[in-house]
Length: 164
Ligand SMILES: CC(C)(COP(=O)(O)OP(=O)(O)OC[C@H]1O[C@@H](n2cnc3c(N)ncnc32)[C@H](O)[C@@H]1OP(=O)(O)O)[C@@H](O)C(=O)NCCC(=O)NCCSC(=O)Cc1ccccc1
View (spheres, rainbow, N blue to C red):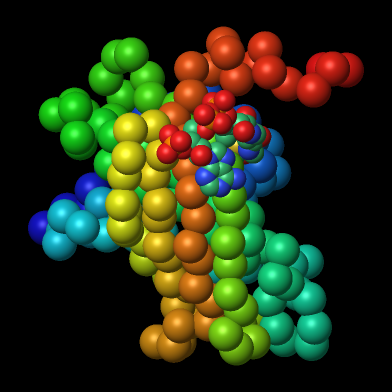
């Protein structure tokens, strides 16, 4: 079966987010895709050497970035599907991180492609809870439990702290 298209490419190809923006010049550019099981959303990422946090161990802040972006895309994919629409159809759906929760269960080795495996656990209106595992060499090394809120981008920008 051919790999599903990445949600980022379908829904927001001009995005400049450091973690998931296709248009960011030097960002992580993660790609999140529906798993064939129809429940999980999967991404793979090989940490670059500058993201070491300890000898041969991945910096925890990188894991937070990966989980943040991947889970946000999981939430947005869920909203598109709940409306019976394809990612990329109009009007676009936007979610933002309201709460980012991450437990670091064991050190994550460098030099391994990581798998992020996320799913929606509960949705109430604009609010979506997303659970995520970070898997390295077949072991879960971190577990996310986060909340994403669907927003109107114009209103979100208006609410930005003064100065921007
Ligand atoms: C928009 C909102 C999150 C919520 O405000 P409003 O719209 O006024 O809505 P309201 O306060 O009514 O809440 C609605 C519902 O949500 C609930 N809830 C709220 N908070 C929490 C919580 N902490 N924890 C748990 N739940 C919480 C709240 O109780 C309510 O639930 P209810 O319906 O009563 O059951 C606002 O606080 C904000 O702008 N925060 C900054 C967000 C930001 O800057 N994020 C980082 C940048 S984004 C990024 O970079 C990621 C990205 C990656 C990839 C691609 C794209 C993006």
